[in-house]
Image 1 (cartoon, rainbow, N blue to C red):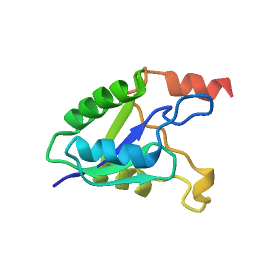
Image 2 (image 1 turned 90 degrees about the horizontal axis):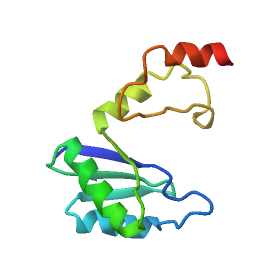
Image 3 (image 1 turned 45 degrees about the vertical axis):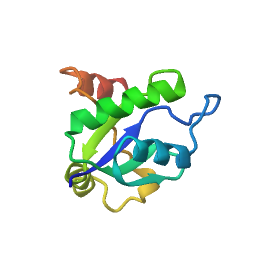
Image 4 (image 1 turned 120 degrees about the vertical axis):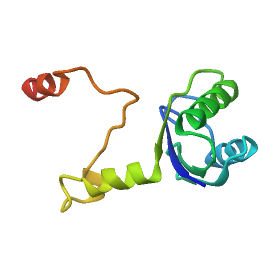
Length: 120
């Protein structure tokens, strides 16, 4: 059964109604996901499902929207996709707390990285 990592956007930010990770774990289990694990209060969930990546995303977004009373963005990646990101780290000697990866639903606009580099 495929393993997925679900990254929930702005779930437990200061000033927002948060969702305890125990409740998030229970919600995921109630949705039929298996081997559910959460990571601190990050809103990151590791789970298993026979459903597709896009189906897992849709199911989680709908359930979280109902639970939180507002939309909650969810990015879902497979375990091999996350492993590839880790393996491609351009700063392997840096401490983990000094390196960040950003995941997007769609590719960024053409030229946006160049514009960003020129802005700094």
